[in-house]
Amino acid sequence: MEKKTLPKRRPKEATRRVATRKRTRLARPEPTRAPVLSLSSPPEDVPFPIVGLGASAGGLEALEQFLRHVPVDNGMAYVVIQHMDPTHKGILAELLQRTTRMKVVQVKDRMRVRPDVVYVIPPNRDMSLLHGVLHLFEPAAPRGLRLPIDFFLRSLALDQQEHSIGVILSGMGSDGTLGLRAIKEKAGVVLVQEPTSARFDGMPRSAIEAGLADIVAPPAELPARIFAYLQRTPLIDRAEAALEDKTRSALEKAVSCCAPAPGTISRSTSATPSAVGSNGAWASIRSTGWPTTCGICARTPRSWICSSRSC
Image (cartoon, rainbow, N blue to C red; front, side, top):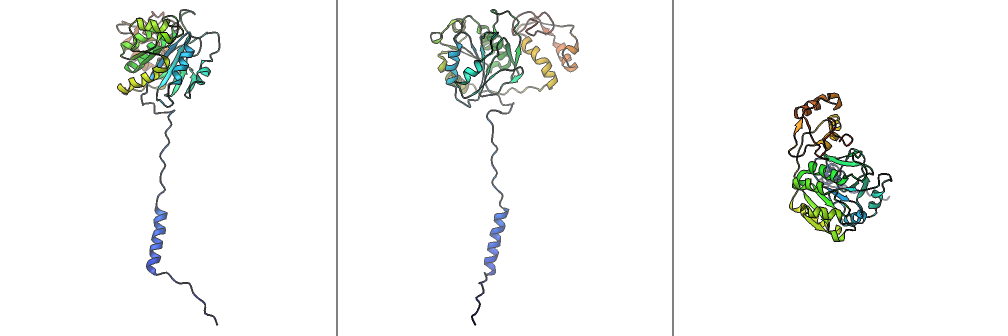
């Protein structure tokens, strides 16, 4: 009879080592993946530069040259204020999207500014900036007398203070000069297109002759000059007490257009608390009073609140 061969048994010590290795593999935790950070949606409390770009006649070519030399994920936001026909549909955002990989959008009222995005003003609107939010207004001045670049750059200076950056490109007239002056008063930086490179040199020459230009260069060189400037002057976050959403929405438009300029004398008013929408907000306003003149448009308001309709 043939003898059956039984399988060899492992020594007890070897069996214990194998069992220990199995338990170790089972207990070993899986490596955790680092969270993916989105560059397009950074935390709201992280400061970033906002660049105001003013242009008029011949400005499309200058804007394309400027944006073509702005790298993607540069960490800055760009707000374009262009003179446009109020009766035509705005297509500037679509035209600029062809020259840059950054997102280009036409502004809607109360749109929050994000880095690496280009914001374009819609036709037949004035626009201001307050607490990083863009606000749209119906123009108060008649067609031909509007100064939308000055209007926005003044609000940019008030909102960003010494971190405000203003750029003036090709265009006729002098729109933008007063806005650049407000930026200089807040210790911001002003860049102007070289007049010889502009199709229409009225706006660049007006800013240069007023002594406001810190940097004068062709549009293709301006982005690099901005980056070099920011490397020497890093941003410092200015923490502010947060307002309730209801209070903020009721007051933002008034403050963005009615911020008192230096030396403005305030006065009291007989407006009712319901006009503001919050008793607490009314108490704070009543303690300071409304300005006699508008810090944005420099005109005397006809009523207690100076929106672009009542200036």
